[in-house]
Length: 411
Image 1 (cartoon, rainbow, N blue to C red):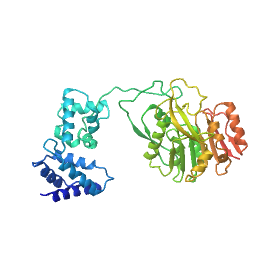
Image 2 (image 1 turned 90 degrees about the vertical axis):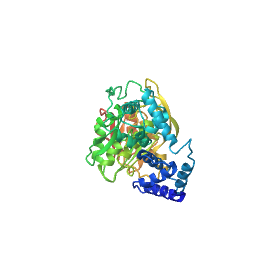
Image 3 (image 1 turned 120 degrees about the vertical axis):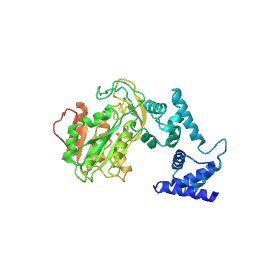
Image 4 (image 1 turned 180 degrees about the horizontal axis):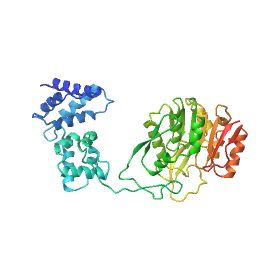
């Protein structure tokens, strides 16, 4: 076998990966035996295929072929092919057998994401459930390692039953958690169901006890042509609910809290609603500019933040993150690619009047027909009614609902 033949095997293997087909193991075996000068084990073939998968896909086929050939040509007796991988396996087994913590590099190479992953893998090694050859074939291949340990990784751990208090927020400040339990729960609507990811007590509250008035408002007024602007969207419950009522509904969600923005986009993607719902990591206010956002509770799904409202005096430490703010009027001028709202929901835990004052042109536009705003202070409610009444809006329903929701319609 010559270099040209080896090049052909490498090219064929990479083409198989590009096309989603299984790599021909006969060619990989022949190529490795040419390099090693000896027979190779099945696990070494698995490891070599994994290495091929890790080559950046943005490189051209010929560039990837050349990279593999250079790697093979650089192998020496002291630094043979898969030398670093063999070292990682040796380090893994040494640590497991000595009862020592895995290094960060080993944790990376074998997907050890938490202390429970580490304990499971170490116990499997000490119990003979994983051999060195099998570990080599699983290196940088978490799916293979997970399958190999199926039925073995039943780890017992103490459970903490966490609930929400103090307006829904946890009393205890937590640092990074060693393990996170996560699931997607399904919520029914009069249209089709949607799903939301749950990883903590605050996110659980969002789906377990949504505001009934807001849900009823959406169910009673949204039509297939509706466009909801959700100001203070949190992790997206109401935007996703609206978009799930009819296929044609569009929603634009505004949320400046950094942890909520990440989960909001996760939930949009989880439901494959990227074409119907778009999230913006910004605050709406009366002026456009750069502000700071006070995170009163640093947890995904958190609400009642200090936010951009400096008047709010919330006990405890506040973490400030950077925040870009727009008035709704300015935002609409600069986002011509978005549809104009027919529905506007404002729930920003404090600066609702700022949002209204920055949306006077929008509120005057007859295309906007429905408004729900959460306000509790009587003086602010009266000011909101004055501003909206001058633009032709009428308050419907009782003035003082339990949640402070005020629903307006265009007269």
